[in-house]
Length: 115
Image (cartoon, rainbow, N blue to C red):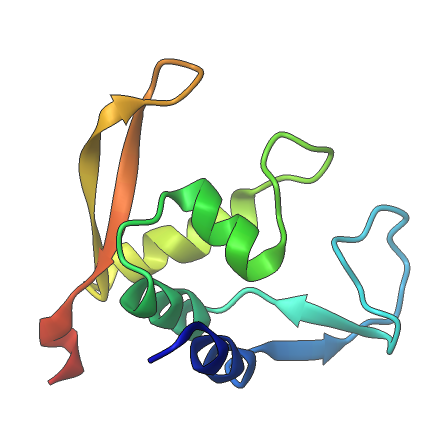
């Protein structure tokens, strides 16, 4: 599957909810008054199509979320951990450390969960 088709396919998995405002620092509402929902299906499909990404790379590619800013990554990390607990994805500790000295984990899709 080429890159354009992957992007179009992932676009169909996006879920939105009507955003009413109220928060001064809301995470990424778009101009139509809708806000993107972080969902397991989208994350799992992204990992299936792009194996070996780190958590930061996944969140940046899917949600344009860069860690270390003013917003918390809790909802993204929790969704990823739920997908791991349910057995849809798994992770492997990488060989290389990131800038802070921690080992990087790479995420992969479990092909047996397709059955």
